Length: 446
Image (cartoon, rainbow, N blue to C red):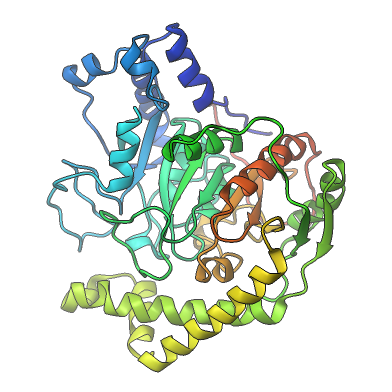
């Protein structure tokens, strides 16, 4: 059985508001009903925002004020390490401050300014690391939604909201997007301010967006930056370097089969492809990512929590302990190697080339095994690169398989153009039936 979700397009939502065929208030209330309907199954939310009568008055569609705001009619879920004014930021842990945030994080305030409605806070793993929350995968109750942006990815993957905010420090957005069948964009490190966001590592933390389709991601990205959405003649990359995850992880057979389809899909688009021969750098970057992450986490939340670190999960305690053993010179050496690799990759890619590889090792594994491996994201996250997760492919069990497209810094437009061209082709592919231990779908009525 394949679970099919209705595509609740952000682009179509706003178009309906502009046309005056439906009010923003009606759409927001419809989304709230969908959230409540599926929450007993998904457990994707930590707290829902109150939609008051005064909010409803501000959200009536069909008028000039609503139609001029490009995200009017679009509901947003916010990962619970990002501040929403009037709601606590609990970071998936009882050790966090229960006091409601005084104001929205900059990214949340920007979405509100553009007309979006915040529906509430979504589940995160503990402080954005490995200890999972209660959220289930939209496609299988026994599969993990990934981590740490689990609630955001599950809510979008199930179609209960059109947009969710997440973050990535290792593979915290790319992997959940892949597992939950969502499109995900991790932006260039530092390109969007992270004030109001509780992170693990200032060198690694980046903001990300999750939607159901790459088309919606492109729409959101360009609206966020007050840029026009490119047309169908958007410039595509000259060359794509194909990476099969070698150097860090052996991917499952279904993902391997999908990767073998990519060259022919690119050929249809008139794009040349060639294997990525960069394993030495990839391995070094993965190790250095661990070094930097543990070093900065220990000196960040480790110091902030003090004696309360004993109340944290075993996984997070181990990260903080490892970080205390990393010296300043160890961290500096890791960043020096990163800079050398970044320069090497920049020369390779130039302004017009990208990398395509697996967004995760395969379909979502059983949730009893954890949240999956972030190894396929570590090299690119250490270099602060933008990464796009493209959904559409499926296993024979109906579980999603995602590809990631990696580009040079500030190449989001290039990634989105290629992702928009690839997604319908991925959706048209037959399902992949390799040898997999991934859980089969449970019978669910959506």
